[in-house]
Image (cartoon, rainbow, N blue to C red):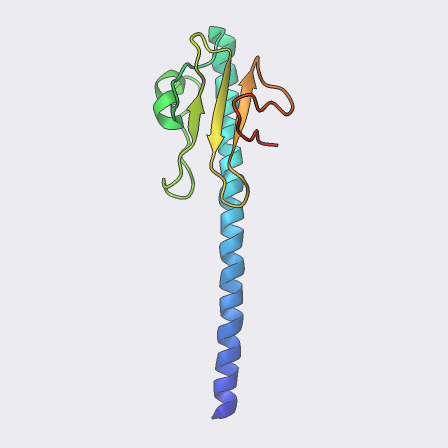
Length: 135
């Protein structure tokens, strides 16, 4: 009987280790999906820029609020939402009209939240608005 209890305890311990590893893999997969989502948005923004000579103007909104009207359905079928179910939101920022740049906020889970930047003011190490630029 004691041997059976020991075996059950060992199986329970191994199962908990596997579940923790699986959760870590899920978190990394959501971060990879965030990166892929934003790359699609960046491509759509560049196509918008090619057609209009400027980026979408915004005063600091969620990605969905700022970009649905100008980009859907011409440049994208829909604006991506965060893969974690909506408790984190992508942000879209610029403060000029016409907008010569854009910044998109990405709320990662496994690394520091950061911004991707596009347009005339973006360069390696650009942190001109005082926030982390994604590497």
